[in-house]
Length: 509
Image (cartoon, rainbow, N blue to C red; front, side, top):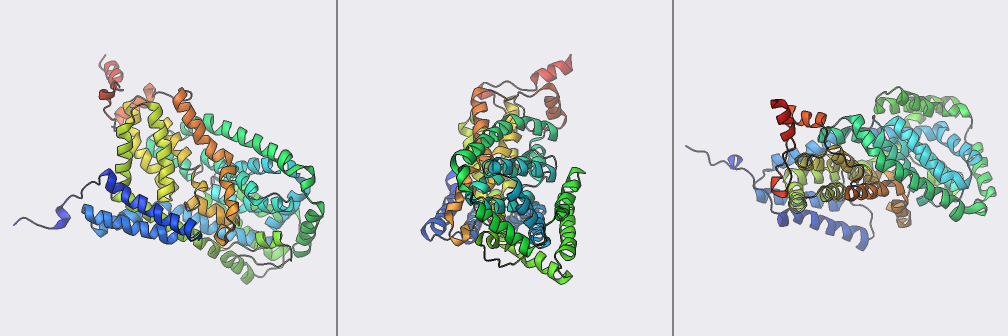
């Protein structure tokens, strides 16, 4: 007897209209929460979005087990980054207690000048991020210290945060130790170091422009008279009063950098920094072992009477990251449901049906990665999904998929910190103490001030339409397509020849 089990029925593919339903409704609920209620907690709107997507999936014939598998598969991919968040929470609390962060702030106020501070912050974060291979680790450690220095110079928080984000995510984008930098070439089938080299034409000009803007801001906006030396002195005196300040307290930070230079994995390297910070806190600041456990779990607490110090140093610990981690898990679940039900694929397919030139496809790839970041809240999905969907089209055009790997990084890695409910944006807001959750919405100005992040995709789109730095596939890459049986779209209807025809002719000869 034939089975009538629904398990044997292939789920339907959604139409474009149906695929847009969960996206549009989720954005609507998110808009009500953020702008009508003025409540910056996007968790519930994204959870509602997951539920709406599940209903669409049931309508299409997916069973719950199938959709649940899609949700948890995407969450599973992100667990290494969630682990980084947990360790970074520990390191923030312990490094404040050890005097490492206060020492960085203290010497930064003495050495740096307000005029070059923003430019120096960007460069410092870029160097550290390249070394660590993690933008989040850089933001949560060096970035936090720079926020304290900026407060001492009376520089608005959003300017400092913009410079920190520009440098940290630039470094993450070109570091061979970075997970996203490895993910982009992996899903598009190109070599890691070729991928990094191909990102330089967009990344370097964006960084140089950002550097120029930060230098201009230092002199034109902040100026000579803005920094109050009495304010700086009060902060340094308070740090001296509450902490032992010494260059050797920088050992935990130097240890992490040394391990990064030795190309050790990020999580063990950062945890070594936690251990070194705990030992330093006990030796230099007189903390007990139990105290250090508390700092690592619940963060550091201090009351100096100086608002700038208290707001920056009362933070850290695993528990401080739980708001961000819970948001990331819900956002990733939503993204996984959208992918499993075919909604994201239907939207991308609709775009591809309308775009047939290289410039249009490159622009669409950047825009799709950005939109996936915006809707799904996940930088990994914003790289992996467009990378998989667009790669056959690039090959059908005879274009190197290095163009695609760069596009997914520009719309994925670099746009992630600029979307507040995205995993990257939520972490930046939490780790840098921007207070958006408490209603300090002016600090969201860090988004347009993170020049290097949003200018890179703009430059990438410019190259696509002018033909600059947009390589064709060479013989070695085409050989890889053939030998690994990589999918190639048939674009002959749009005037494109078979990209492997010459290779096959040469092989026949």
